[in-house]
Length: 167
Image 1 (cartoon, one colour):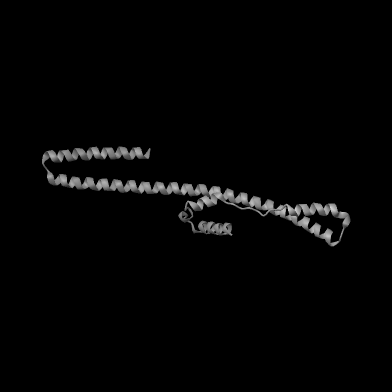
Image 2 (cartoon, rainbow, N blue to C red):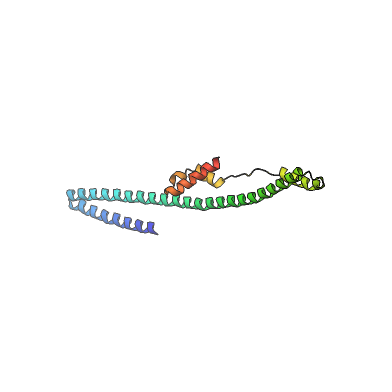
């Protein structure tokens, strides 16, 4: 809607300036036509500069919206990893308890608890190391959006996250 208004104003101005130019040419006033021509050139240059500024503003707005969308996705990704880590901690605690029980059975040489020892040893052998991948964050970095963040505190936190992920 805003663009239509600019187009309408621009069309009106061009029409008005064209009428003035024809009138000056018909009346033989070459010096006034020269002033008019300079004015028209300045008007066109000003219009181009305004259009460039609007385009730059729009591109920055689009890029900031993209970064904001990534913030939401990154937060979700980190929250998922925190949930995964909490589940892993609970599983590791269970595994630790099994190891303690197995050590106690072995240390006390409790032959009557051989079946229980077998259960604990089975639990110990089924543990896998945790796996952390951050595809959204990797995509964010690959697109070079980290350098586009203006707020230093957010940029610093994301750099720390990046370094932690790479370890």
